[in-house]
Image 1: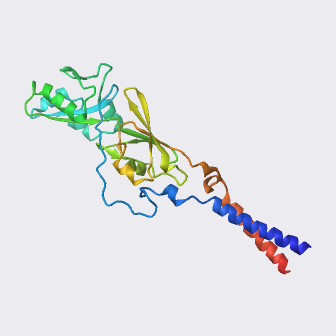
Image 2 (image 1 turned 90 degrees about the horizontal axis):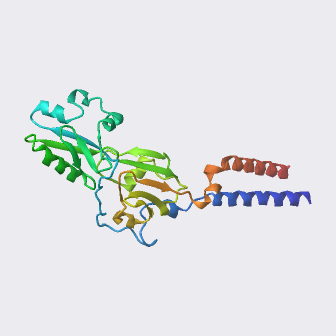
Image 3 (image 1 turned 180 degrees about the horizontal axis):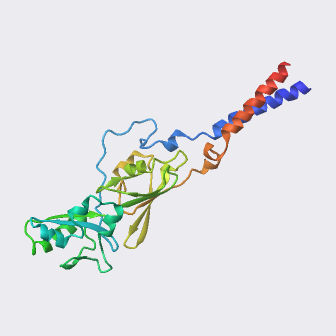
Length: 264
C-alpha cells in the first residue's frame, strides 16, 4: 500500500511540474512585432509611407533660436549666448537660453519684441523670424529647434521614464528601443498613446503586433507623447513574479529522493 501511495504521489508531482511549466509560457503571438494579417501568410513586401503630421507650436513650448549673419556684433545682440559658451551647452543651458511661447502665442525677441508663432510649424516659425530679421540684418541664417521634444514611457518597458529626442521626428519603434523594448509581459497588441491636443488629451490604441502599424497616422510620435504599455493578464503567474526556479528545484529534489527510496 505504501509503495502505491508513493507512486501516486510521484506521478502527481510530475504532472504539477508540467502544468506549472506550461502555465508560465507566453505565446509568441503576443510578443512578436509586425505580424501579417493572416497566420499562414508572410509580411507584405512594401508599405505606404506612414503619414507624418508636423508639430504645431503651443503655449509653453520652448524654442532654441540662433541668428547668424556676417556681422559678429549683430549676432551677439540677437542671440542669448555667444560662441565662447557654445562648447558648454547641455540640456539645462539650452533650456534656460530658449524662448518660450507665451500665453498670447508670441516669443519675445531681444530688441525686436513679440513675434507671433502660435500654431506654426518649426519651418513656419523660422520663416516668420527671418522676415522680421531681414529688416535689421542682411544675409541672415536662422536656426530654430524645439527644445521640449520629450517622450515618456510608463508600464511594461525595461527602462520606463522620460526621454529627450534630438531629431525632427521619431517612430514608435525607435522610441520603444530607447526604453529598452517592451518586456515579455507587456501587451503589445494594445499600446496606449496619450497625446495632448487643443481640447485636452487624446487616447489612441496601437497594435504593434500588426504590420498595419507601419501605415498608421500614429506611427510617428509627437513632442510630449506618453506611451503606456499595460501588463498581460497572466503576468501574476509568470516567472517575473513567482520563484519558479526555486519551485522546480524543490520538485526535482523530491522526485529524486522518492525515486531513490522506491529503489531501496
